[in-house]
Length: 339
Length: 268
Image (cartoon, each protein chain N blue to C red):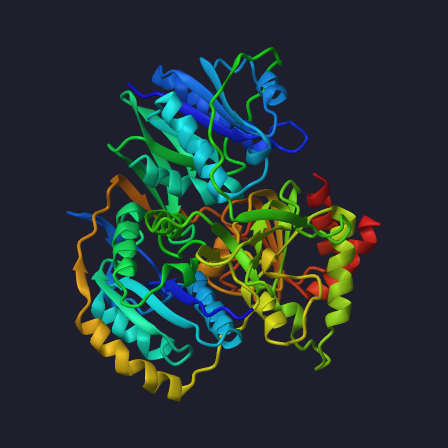
C-alpha cells in the first residue's frame, strides 16, 4: 500500500503559494483514489499559520522542519529538511510542486533515499492500487505514460495542471521534525526582481503575447523599425497585462549585438530551449518556424497568430486563427481600440 | 585572490532540434525512430555551460575544463567535429545511450563514477557545470544527483551569471519564479552550477582549438567505457501530441476588422 507525503515550502509571509495548493489538491485526490494515508510536510521559518490554512485537507499528519535556517531556498538545508520529512513519514510517494526550490533539491534527496524522481508531472492516474504518471519528453514533443516499482518515488508537479485545494482553515497539530542545520557555505544575499511596470513575465496572466524575430526585420520600406516595434509591444503589454514570450532568434539578437527589443531577456524565451508556459490564450506575432519552436505554446489554450506567411509552420495546425497581415499595422490598431 | 578552477562540464548529445522526432516502442523500452541516424548536437543548455566555463577559464588563469559526455561513441565523435572547435577542453567519454528515456539516477551514477576517476582532478577546485535540463529527458535532475554522489552540498540551478569575487567566493544568479533572480554567495569551489542560457553568444569555430582538442578527443573516445543504462521506469505509452487545431486562415481582411476581431477575442 502506498503512503503519500506532499511537500510545501512556506513563503515569507507565512502563506502557501498557488503551486503548493495545486499540489496539495492533486495529493488529496490521489490519496483518496488509492486509499492511502496522506502526510503534509512543511518547511520554512514558521509553518503553523500555513498548516492551519490547510488543516481540513484530510491529511493524517502534519510534519514540519522549521526555523531560520530553513527559511531561504538553499540546496544544503532544503535537502536535509526534505530528507528528514520523507524518512519520518515513511512515504512511498512524495509529491511536491515544480518550484525552483524543489527542482534544485529533490534530485539530491532521491539519491539519499535511494529513490527515483520524475519531474514536470502533468497527470496522475491511480491504477490498481498504484500510480501511473504522465510527463513530456524531448522538450514537450512527446508525452509518456509510465510507472515505477522503485520506492520512494519523488514527483514534482507542473504548475497550472491540477485544481488547487480549497477548504476552510482550522488548527493543525504540527509535529516538528528536528534537523541539525548542515554547515553552509552558501548564503542567499538577495533577490533581483524587475519593477512591477518593467516586469514582462506574468505567469498568472490570461494572455501570452509572443514576439518573433519578424519585429526586427526590414519592413516594406526597406528599413527596420525596432523602436516602433518596442513601443507597440510595450503599449500592448501595458494595456492587457499580458505575459511576454519571445522566440529564441529574437532573444539571441541581444547577445549578438543585433537590433533588439530592449526589454527582452532569455527569461522571455519560449520553445525548445526556453519555457513552455501555461496561459488560457496566446497571441503570436511575427513568429516563424516549425514544430521545435512551437512547443513554446504547447500549453496555451486558445491560440491566434499574426504574420505575413499564410503557410507558416508556427501557425498551421497549431493556431486556431492565423491573420495574414502586417503585425505593425494590426497591433497599432489593436492598441488604439484597447485604450 | 586568483583561483584556478577545475571545471567539469557534463553535457551530451541530443537530436538536432530541427529534426522530426517519432517515438517507437522496442523490447528495451521506448526510443526514437532511426535514433542513430538523426543528426545530433551538444545539448543546448549544456552548451551554454561549456561556453560559460570557457569564459571563466579566460578570467582565471590556470583553470582547466573537462567535458564529460555520455553517448553513442560514433555520434559523440561526429559531435566533437563542431564542439571541439569552440572551446578548449579535455574529453571524458562514456559509451552508452543518450536517450531521453534512460533513467537519470543511473546516468548520474555513471557520470559521477567517471568524474571521480579523472586523474588530477582536485575536489577543492571543482566546479561541476552542466545544463539545468536536457533537451531529451528534460527532467533537470541529473546534475544535482551527480553532485550529491560527489558530496557537493553547494548546488545552484538555472544559473544565468557567475561572478568570482576578490576573495574567491562565488556570486551566483539563479532564475526563480516570475522572471526574478535569487542571488547567492558561495564561499568558493567546490560547487555545482546547472546553467540556464547564461548571457554569452556561441563562440565562433576556431580550427586551432579544434586541432589541439582532437589530439585528446580521439584517444578519449577509444578508451570510452561501455555504460549499460536501463529505462528504469515501465513505459506504458509514448505518443506524439495530436495535431488538434483546424487553423482558420484569414487573408485579405482589412486591418481595422482584424484588430476589432482580436480585441473582441481578448475581451471574451
